[in-house]
Image (cartoon, rainbow, N blue to C red; front, side, top):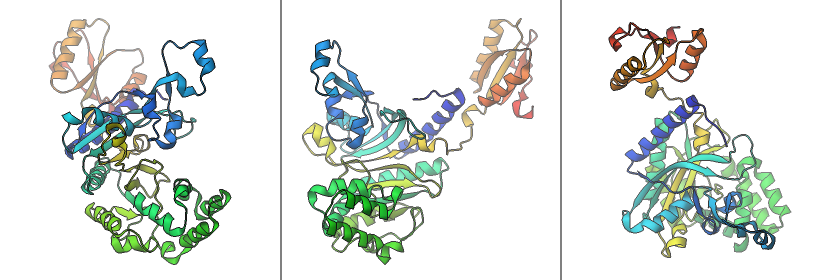
Length: 420
């Protein structure tokens, strides 16, 4: 968990403002949910491995006997900090369904908490930026999500990104064709999900070590090595996208309807930014259909991802409701973004002598604020140089000296900080 200095906080807020603005332009509405949810809801099997990283909140009034008799740490907790924004959204929709439109498009940009082992790029508190569409069963939901995300990355100046796209139904069909038993599918997918990090040989070796069906593993190994796969472009390279290309990357017998739907989604996203990845898994077990990630050719990790999770809301509501969402990895993109400091372009610091009255300072400040300027009052120091450097680092671009003879803003002589 981190502190942010003013300049860092300002940059983060500017990036968030761009994200919110583009999502809003695409018809999404922002909501807010509590930082805590019921512990039973957070541990209902919807969050995959992230459930193991949830921070629990102890029940009030616990006694020594409660601690002595508890068989599990969760017995002592009735609340927990949210580990993502999707589980709270499902609860939110189930609670407020009658007040929401038939097809609900939601924005959430807020912190979440996971008990990660601290290391570079992994934080215990971090911001997620999610958009979700609830109530749309057709592929239009995925198309809207991908298009809104593509426009957001363009607005942030992050060019060259590509969506990797797959479908959980095609993954399961692939495993069935290769000969893996149904009860092993989720465990096999956990290993295949490591493909980008460890490579094909290591994936095959791990599957053998874990004792999965030897013939099925051999078949997968041969499938990895087939010429068609070796000729596929690397992740991030542009490639043709359509039913033929998808079928060529899969074993024979892939579900024709799913292939056609996936091809339609990819072709509807403008700019040729989509490629089919037959081994994209996404770790969350709640995905039921399309899954996708956004990647950049210069980075070894994804910048966001999502998919369709039609079964989740029904766990709370008792009636299945179609849903799909996309989450931008805010902490991964915020340091990559270079936006103009438009909000601080009019920033001016009034450096005043000690004998200037408070009434004069506040009158000058009020006039400048009314004209659209950002204003800070600074008492004149003996050495002005460190103050100027600090002001420039905080985004101020001009200073003006205020003395006893200053009566109105017309008397101020502005000096550009960049000019020295």
